[in-house]
Image (tube, rainbow, N blue to C red; front, side, top):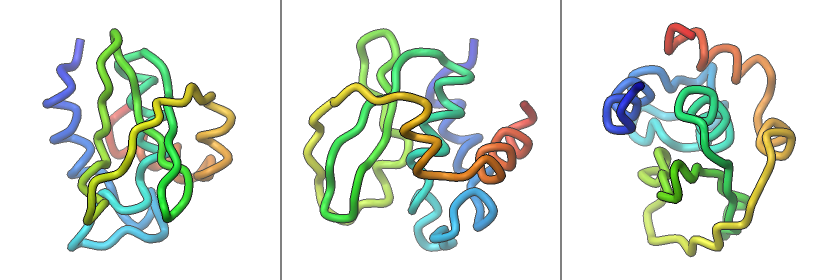
Length: 109
């Protein structure tokens, strides 16, 4: 099984403008939340959660009862965590099949 810290390092190298249209080299996690939550669930299982932010809905994961937010670095200020259960369909509606396929491919899945 992949360790979350190892997966985070792999994700940082896989994020690109092809996995989020708002990606920047200065803030590579920007806009990656939904696609990342989907791929993390593919690899580590668990659930997808969401919370509201000033910029819109933010997606992240819960794995074995522990919150994992691999894209928290995109925010300049702390965000609230409402831990509202979400679905793959809802997260996919916030990204695109092409971005999802690209991130999976870049991670070798």
